[in-house]
Image (cartoon, rainbow, N blue to C red):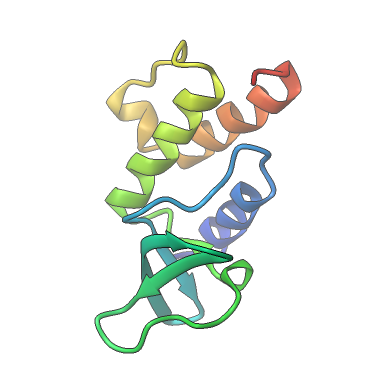
Length: 110
């Protein structure tokens, strides 16, 4: 990811409705792990090699990954109680999704 994309990805982590979902890709530096399943106390992340055994807060979502973008879109729709639709071109604008998720917090959507 570019430095700008990395900053945007970090902003997602601070959103009230943010949470990891199966299939999302988490990165730390040049290393990447895919979220596999939730277990007591956190998530299991797998890279095809050793599983991630660190704190999931050290990972940021890879916002260039199609599966991660799809999960983020789901989080936006959930935050807006299903009343938020996003066109395919807008979905590719990650800043648009971040703004929508942040706006749900400001609006007080539960």
